[in-house]
Amino acid sequence: PNTKRQSIMTGQEPGKNNAQKSCCLSNKLRLETDDSTGFLYQKCATGPLIMSNIFLSTAIIRLAEMELGCVGDDVECGKIHGFKPSSLLALSATVSGILSAFLLPFIGAIVDFTPNRHLLGVISAIVIVAIQAIQIYTVESTWFPMAILQSINGFVYQSASLAAYGYLPEISASLEEKKFQWYSSLYYIVFFAHQVIFLVAVAAIAIIFSTGDVLTAQISQGIDTVVTGGFFALTWYFFTKKEAKSELPPGSTLFRAGFVQVFKTAKGLHQHYPKTVARFFIGVIFAQATIYSFSTVSVTYVYEVLKFDSTQISLLFVIVLCFTIPGAYFANWLAVKTNPITGIKIQIVTFIAVNFAAFLTLSDPSKEIPAYCFGAVWGFWIGWYYPLEAMIYSAIVPKGQESELAGFYLYCTQILSFLPPLVFTIMNEADINLKWGGVHLDCYIFVALFFFHFMLPWEECLEAAKVNELKEEDQNEDGYAEDNIDA
Image (cartoon, rainbow, N blue to C red; front, side):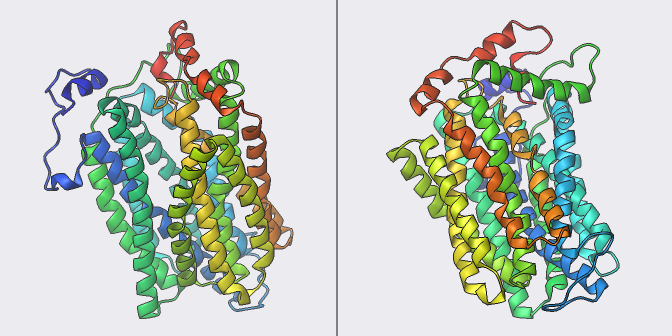
């Protein structure tokens, strides 16, 4: 199916090297095209991968405390390798965020300007699975190297994601619009479903066999190595090899071209859509800084302040994930009743209030039940946010540029991801109460609210999107073609 449209995207003759790959999988486990099937299994792979970090993170803090001899309630820990054990997760997230901010444009240039997109994805997947396998041996004598590997793995994960998201323009062009919209929803359904299944499975094993934090993390890493490794194998089996999207400008390098693309895209958006798309992307930068850092900060907080073990933390996140579903439905209802911009502003205002109340209320180990209740509320509000962000993006981006801007969109979600965990680390090392480290996350999403609030009214945003000035500008410039805009 769609061989004619696929030939347009790949430059191949219809029916030549673009038939669906044969595999042992039932057609019920495949989508209409190979690339869309590959993206589906990429989501299946990354869901458990992200959740395995919860168990590993808890084990790393526990092992650091064991090395210091400060395991137990009300025992003051010193510092190890210059930092408190409670700072280790935030520090790891900071390193991953800095690597992503400085190196993702280079990865984007590989996707755009070379025929190595598929190879990049394969290598990234192999590195991720290899690190996951190595981390099975996380014990008291190895926890620090494992923490370093975790920082590296965070960046490699973003590289693999960027390689996969590079296929979205081809997937979109090869499918009917309604089919692509359904697949877009399906990808996130399977993503969250695999997260929940993984968490429940590992938590059940921990409860039944009474495994401690360290053994639970080892079991989690072992299971994820098999699960994520298997799904990644399917991912890059189905993803097809592609030629370079465009030629590298004469005299340029991949590293320079990547940053030039980011700058060029940002400049074009500011010049032609300053009060719509430009302000939206700036808002996304700050909003995602809060949401991306939330799991790191919350895991550290409930472990250190509420004294949760890995099983309790996994149950908390199961509740969070389950309540994202009604949150997503509520987002759709509110967007219909008002509009997506109004909906996201209401979401941010209420999230700030909930987050503030949660970190001030959950002050000691006796607050276990309230923590689960706030987990439900957090999940609802996170599920409320993502659909609205996606609705705004798909509606206000200039027509014909939705998929091409996907890479820039992904970069915006990562460029500031290092800042909240860095500030959290600084506050923790300065002996500031951890509750203020949690509350400070509200600052970034408040900045996002500011930029969302000063966007044009919804109807005017929709009107502005009907004129593709980015495409017109691109056609008048030498060196960079219109479909380069997805750095």
